[in-house]
Image (cartoon, rainbow, N blue to C red; front, side):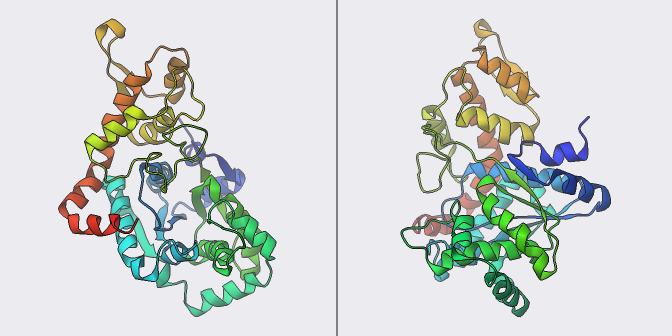
Length: 336
């Protein structure tokens, strides 16, 4: 049986620091944790990777906060205007609630704009801004913020606000994508100077693009991802075309979906096959699944079908919400 620490850090790309997380789990049964996302582009299914981790931490007794980082969405090259902030934040929140399913009620949802302008927060922003060079701020933001040419002041502020969120959301543990690493590592250098702990971090991997080619999944590339509001027919078509080389797990978005999304959420995956190809087979272990796939004992098309069926089920609550609120989805889609 897995220990609480093993569950907490399972599937992570990197953990900072493992001993600190162990101590938090041992000493604080009601520890606080948070995850933040800026409502910029279409909400796609790769978000399920960190959200599965949030569900695991909540089931361990943690109190989770999900930050809709609306100010950040504007600081990042004005991807979201002030006029669109609330619309996109509402869209993201409903997408999150949908993909979380019955777990959604376990979390607190908060907009960054509800506290990031308050005096204490702004004063702390001034304090850490005085300590960070433009070179360091740019390096911290480089994996997250879309910089074109000379960095804008807003793009350099972005990582500093994200660092402060750890303090103002009182996080013991922060969950983020591995692309957030540089920001939070700068935070470990700064947070103690504003009277807060360094924080512990669980960085989750990024899902490869469905197109292949070695790139990560991107909200800006409609061919690389699946929106959580996509119809079952659209999901089937997209996955059918997805890069999934036989026997190869490297940068394989389909097998990565099994590892990082389906098994953590469902606990198993059932692959249906004709009797002449071995009949149906069920996997509860990612190691067993990947070993069979690498040995060529499972056909990519059978895996694609299993992934398609499971994703359609997982995304159903979000899809149904927007089917009942087509005006919101139509307005949102017109902004991307």
